[in-house]
Image (cartoon, rainbow, N blue to C red; front, side, top):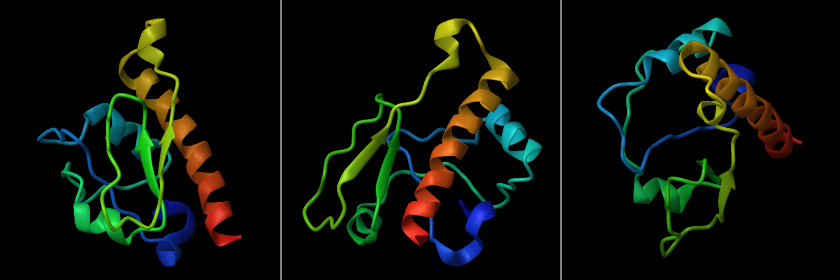
Length: 114
């Protein structure tokens, strides 16, 4: 989102079971479209952030996040096609997932900014 709209939209990210490091294939796929992830690291979902944001988006149907008291936003799930189910892995998989998420992020930015 930041590479599309700069500081016009604040974005937080977190996971239900974050790994120790960012996935190398994902980092490389983002670099291909000049998206830097410097300073980013896997982190858990923060309940205080959940309460403060205008939109909560969950990627895929594996992560389960329940609404918490005080949230002002509903939880939206973006189901994405998993290339692994078609035998596509590695860099090609990461690029396909990146492109699908990018399309949705572009739509979300347009919706939020009008």
